Image (cartoon, rainbow, N blue to C red; front, side):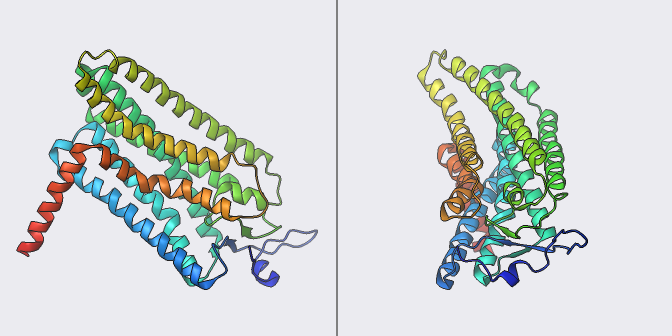
Length: 330
């Protein structure tokens, strides 16, 4: 990868030496290519991914909001997940697309901190919402008679607010803990967006406690949610296999398969990215892995749910027909 000239890379940098400090005001993100034509091509590809992902997620939000048949806990959580996915895409993709289009890799310290906070927050809320959705499926299949009581609207709202509030605490702690470090080695972040592991690599402070707290909290949250999801689906499968009618088994499995696919995609991509051995310089492989983690899951989620859910597809057709009728009348 071709870096900018040395005088550009050290501009506005915090260089702590014996008796003086220069305040850093910006970072430089990793570029996708040094060829102008490829930069424009990457920018357009990112824009297409972003547009398609936003349209898919917003369609699910609209359908589950206006179709009264979908006003159930399952679709309430699906709507929230789609909102989070739309925000997840908006944290990294527009900035990367604009940077590639205008050939500008700079991002301010404030912008970097905001991106880290939002990215961490969205990732946390995404995973905890997927965990809550596993709980919803467990109650619906294993305790159907008690489902309206256990998963009442108040409980659903409390679960969602808990995900959001704990996500704010989680993201706020790690963002603040990261930016109390000093950065005096390089301002080049080997990533197309700001994330905590990339900043830890370029810090000149002792980062052991940061790495330990990040890894420890990720393991606690990740393993805790994964264990809960696994236990829920073990109970679900055990119950479903005892159904006497094969058609009932098929319907029960059809409501679980999209959720299992989404959880697997999010977990596998995230683990594959962040459990890789650390590298001191960026590579095309690092970018591809980061794209797979930060863009592909929220992009594919609405497609997975729409293709596997007849009610979503039927409601989407009804909403589209209504929109066409209103357009023709206008």
